[in-house]
Length: 331
View (cartoon, helix red, strand yellow):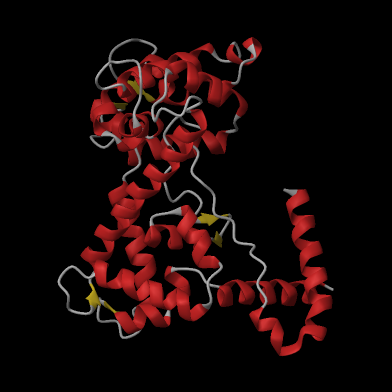
């Protein structure tokens, strides 16, 4: 992180020294700094749950527009392309998307239309990320992968690396086998998406439940109580952490209040709700764009706030100016 901050600071210094010479022409200059991060497959949080899709939307109180752009475009690659477009071209392409988003053709985007579009985008993002991983792992380029190919791509060919975490490797193989719907020993594109995103694939949920119980259900009663839930993590934590986890367990995870998690509650804890995330994103986009507060977005409102929905050169340049202002203030 320190290295990244140094690079950013050097960029700001260089750009600041160039601005006087560039004058008004500087507004057309564009050096892309947005960071669109492809999701890491099977990424887990500390408690073992899958990381929610919007985990990077806000980081340490800082809002990251990249999440909003990807939620509209359904593609990391498209979002990166939009960041490099002139503002008028960005608006033109966004206008085309709005006609597809507008299911009832009334020139307004209702909340339900925006939510449906965002859920579609989430699925497309998963498919894109999965395809990229499949292409990397598919060494013989036959459009499908074996376990050996996945093993080589994920862990490399060093036996010591494979021995680092046998439990992780065992779970990974179970996930591969469960994703292999026709049991032919290969994963095609759809099966590989189930492997890389089991938390978004309902047919994979029984395996996720089985693995969670195997990992945490110490007394074998088919439930997870609070002590089992926190496990060894408590050894290195303080009292405040323990109290916070207990409150989260009691009021977020243990929905029926019986002091333990049953199968449905375990899955609810493990699997993030894209429905809830999409609802939050709709609220966020409406809050920044619904100027007349009529609870629907006109095409003009969205195009007026195009930088909220998609990127463009002008938006990036504004970001650079803000960085320079902050740098000058610090001096």
